[in-house]
Image 1: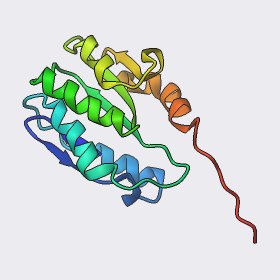
Image 2: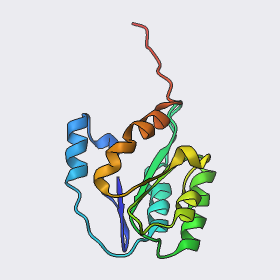
Image 3: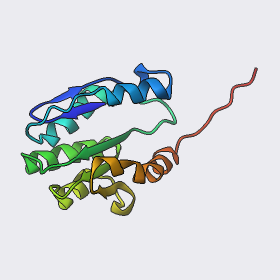
Image 4: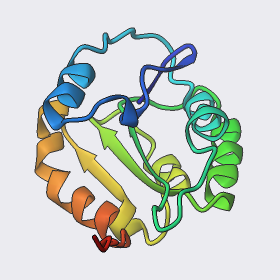
Length: 147
């Protein structure tokens, strides 16, 4: 999980936790820092620190949640291009009315109808949870081992 404002920061890797409750507690424990919206730095951090090694059959998926306009739209678009080139399936979620819809489309994978979402406030993120889970899990293959 990466947070971003004036800078971006890796809070933790998802594989740090072995169960859903621990992961949820870690997410809830992340403090809101406020500041600028340097979305491009978050996208660069995804490339440099998170999605480094590929595992067979496991797609890379990023979910970018923002409630503001990017401070550097051109850098954000450039970084989004690098993310797309690495075939990272990217969801872009805008929260509130201060987001740039065109920028969310630039960040997100295609088609827009599957990867761009808008909610009025953070409490409504749960309203799109099922759609995101369905889309993130659609290409994951389950391998059974023989004993």
